[in-house]
Image (cartoon, rainbow, N blue to C red; front, side, top):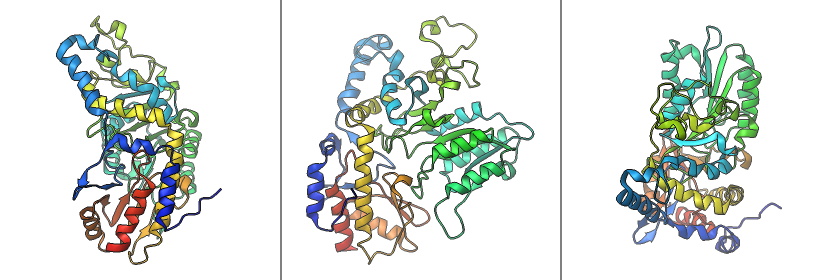
Length: 421
């Protein structure tokens, strides 16, 4: 049954009372403005700090203090296996087998490593397809990869743009372009959600079309991981990478995530750049020549586990396990729809919501496009205790993360805009 929203605060009050995830709001620290918690709708940029992080970090500090190098084999969480502790939670969030996921490095480093292994260009099949207006790191990564192999980005990169006068890319246009370029296409590498518009791409259909064309399908899931459920294994996605500091609340600089489909992850002969930590633990300390990777996604690990860049994520994932990504998505759908409804009740603010109206084609984020005064309005929101971010040209991104945002927060956001803008 479709929810009937209301501009009356009683709706938000009742929705929060019925929200089974409401308790998680108390598990995060909020910045304050004028002595009050801010309205934090910026989880698409940096998630809030879980209250359990201090204790989690202290655990590893104690191991370092009491065990020193022995912490790799002793202590509460032996560091030798630290990346393994996150696999069960991440596998549920991104929809894959535990053997298909690992954590390491940071997002763009992982994109470089994965694309370098999966991009096998030939004289005739060398092009990479991506969305126009992708996040700059993705653009730079693809451009430099193309140049590394001696190709010209102007002819080797295919960018799919929205139609004239539109902001959203039609799935049919992506599929059609894949079919047209099938003989020369080596890889499709899209963002799962476009950072600017908030559009969620149909990764299942894109993957199917890429494979039909004989190309590899990879995704940057920076704005997807922890935002909504995925089924990477069942969709047949070849590889994906994401950061952990947005919806996953892993903290600034948190370790990045990597997914590799088992048809590659289980094959030790799949090309990749190797390092000590991708080798089997039982043979790692033999210090022998000849890299033989683990026959799972951890075979892509290169350097020693980044314990202090991982520990906050490990703490945050305990809440994801408790809440469940399906319930998080269910609340998010209602929260974002409520936000959209209230935004439409603000005729005095001249903006366009450029994120798809179809809930199945977006996550928690709504992008508000202002033809003028966008920066000025954003600055006024910040001064009013509303934390959102601004992206050129003219977009204020508003993202109520369901683990720590309430219906009351959405109403207060609306009330401030209604009364002071």
